[in-house]
Image: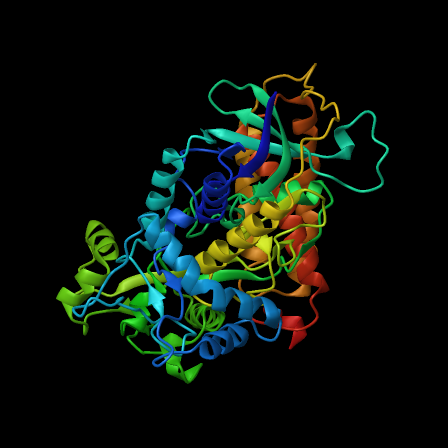
Length: 517
């Protein structure tokens, strides 16, 4: 058993920011970070756009950024949360810079601000087209300098420890005491007891298969919190990024940043017609839900597999300077942007809902906090404004740090039982996991995609129940491994998305149901 003051599950911007702040202020307290895969593998790493933040109130204003966020959220944002996050932004950005993160400057030495869909002003601070990669690098560098942080890579959190696991349980409330964690290299399951636990486990993109997220984005944080009976909301609001590089084989798709459209690229159909102006006055700079739904409508009308992003009229040297990673990726795919259009499709990109938290990042379970994409703060409402995600993670990591700094509990005296898998066997039929994963992902794409209907959602529930039953039977008799646990988590997430989609009786932001028209 490992005992720690603070357990952080996830190593993206949310978890690392909290860990650094807590470790710096309280060198006597220890923090354990567990993360599956490599320490730098997270949704943060793949964030291209940047951090939306108001830095010059003469050119921009907090009120404009607040209004843009509220418009994107389509009436479902928590206005007080929006105000807090946006006004805190400049301070949190400065901290990142102190920790060593670099952002692009213009010829005058000021930040080279970008503009993305849904934004009324240039306010996106970025590092070329790999902002998340740079933020992750800086935070990990700082983590390794702090002696009271232990970072366990290739460690997969299986389940939260709550009253459910305690033999002497007398409490009517649900408390979190840590987590059971699988060492992916040895197969050993470790009990980590913690005074406070932070879920910063990222998104759910792999539930759809075709996604801009890395393969590790399997909704683990949401699923663990759900099984522990934490409150989960707004799971119907899945943001589909309009422009992922089309791959006929599907899978994890390369993101063509929203900033490319902000830079002046046009969307065209196969015939070369620029179609966005007929759907929205903002054309290519409309918010993501509108652009994704417009592309979906074009593809359904034409039967084509993709639409195209036209960059041929743009300044090539400036494009390469701003988007070197995208330019090179296109070249690798034999796409010369000076004369070729980039084939693109919408792909699952971001979860706007998740584990419900208050302004201090507290969940409905005592001593359990959530931050980043797995949390539902009220900032995004029905649709996230571009580049507000890194901002939210930075601000809420700070809010949680502030709260925990003033409320430092000790480890409880409860006896935490070790993981019990007596009688369980190593599964002989791994084909069942792969088969059910493919079935689940196809089900979510075909029945629970950008445009939904009650009929498709009802059918999806029936199909999902069959997958759930088969996987639960396998789970109960098997020694756990990452692939089986991830599949189980994705099934839980799919169940939440479908169920909460059926409860939504009006179309808002990223949620569009034909029966709500």
